[in-house]
Each structure stands twice: as C-alpha cells, then as structure tokens.
Length: 265
Image (cartoon, rainbow, N blue to C red):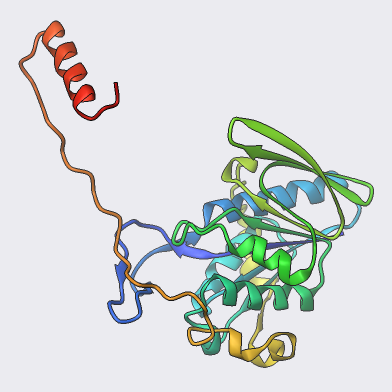
C-alpha cells in the first residue's frame, strides 16, 4: 500500500510580517516548522505502515520554495521512505484552490492508495486544501480524523464531530485529513537524520513535470480566484483590569458585576 502524506512548511511564530501590496506572508528570516496537523499525519502514516507490515511505503509531498527541503528531510528522518518537493516560481502566490490543484497533480503523478493531509495549516487556518485535493483526485474523503485503521480494502476512520464522534468506512483509494491529536510525532533518530541527508533523496517536481496534469491558467497568484481584501497579524490581548486590594466578597461582587455588564450572566 502506498500512503502519501501532504505537508506544509509554516512559520514557527505569531510575529509574522505581511507584504502590504500582495497581502501575502513575508517568510524571509522567519523560522519554519512542519505544520503540526501535518506532522501528526506523518506519524499516523508511519504507525499504519508498521501495523500493516506488508511492504507498505510512506511518501511525503510538499509544495513550496527550495528551503522546504528541510521539512522533507525531517520527515525522512522520522522514517518516511521517500519525499517529493513541488517547487517552481510559477507556483508562487497560489491560494488554496491553486495549491490543491498543483498538489493533486503531484500526488496523482507519484501514485497513491491513501492520502493523509493535516486538517489545516497554522498560517492560513482555512482547512480547504485537503478536501480540495480529494475533489481533484476524485476520491472519497473524511476530515478531522482521530484514528485510522485499515481492514482489507477499506479504511475505518474515527472522526471528531463537535460533541460526538463518527465512525466512517471508506473504500481505498481515499483521502483523510488529520487532527494534531491523531498521533504524537516521534523524534528523529540519529541514524534517521544521517540517512535523510546522506542516503535519501528529495525529488523535485517542477511546472514542466506537472504542466500536462492541470490548466496552467489556474495556478500561481494570477490563477488564484481568491482576492485578499486585507491581511493583518493577530492582535495581542490587552492587560485587562487588575484589582489587587479586594477582599474575597468584594472580588466575587466585582466579577459578577463585570459578567453582567457583558451580558454573560
């Protein structure tokens, strides 16, 4: 079985900068990590491979600039078998639709049985790319996965849903989006790190490699249907009000008064 995990390299900080002209993130000088939901997806794929013990493989796919190679090497060091970087200047500025178009093309070219993506990326929080990839591939999907098991030619997924859970059955091939709670990522081993940089290759697929698998008019910044009206960093919360000299009864009365003023009680 070929398990493909789609990952994204994201900024490791809330102190992001925005380009005022394009309303896109300025990533230069900002430390990056594998998106947390995606990393849980990697671990889930590795555990599934180990559980099946039938020669299954785990392939990592990421779309991004050349520096995303670092994230792919980390996934290889965790135990993934191979990695592909979809990278080309023509891919730059893609919104979720354009990104999913490109990633789906890469996944289709590589081949797959099960595709795992993170629920959403911490730098966008749209939760759109995974489901859109499934639509491009024409396969069934389940989002918000908390547990994944394979039984024969079907996948059993426990899906988190508000105050309850769904147990869903999918035929293979299919796509699953993972919550960070799905699995706790393992640490990279010393041997894994050495193999990731000495023995394994990050294969690069460019526009030329994928151009026959999508309409070039629908990729990149110009081909993205989303128009960003305004972007801004997350605003820090104020310090609030501080009452240091109140007795216990006065503190209770003050809290109740404040809650009534805000119509909470």
